[in-house]
Image (cartoon, rainbow, N blue to C red; front, side):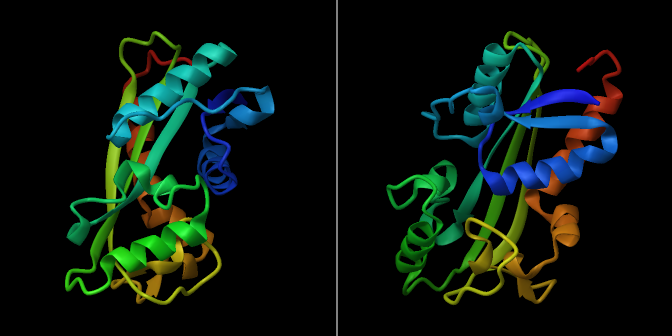
Length: 200
């Protein structure tokens, strides 16, 4: 197994990445297991935050590192919460408060369209001059009533018209196939395979 540090301690993300990367013989190790603290995320874009997190984890571990920065962008809110999705209500990681604020901010808005964004960055080392960078979108709408228990974050309120359910109602295998993170990881894998010189 090839060891790869995941620059996240989000249990939901760790579980998804472990499932998605296991078939490729990657051993995904959350940074918390190595005693690596979370990096600062001062940037307003997903890509910049993901790059900062990947470099931080690689520098602290001496290993290749994979970081994702993801969130949801509501069209009627000019892309908010965006890169602030995890702390939209002010308290990092409080999904209930974040969702409540999103619903309140969308109250009275006719456009309920939104999309999840996932920026993935993989670095071979902290000073890797050619990080692999992928950014993808997953489109849906925001509903007022939560439904489903399989997801995390904004998933219970993120309705997928094509699936006729919320992201939290999808089974994990289906979600990994069609989600922003699943799309991004498949793109990243394609880049990895194209860049044969990358040696994790």
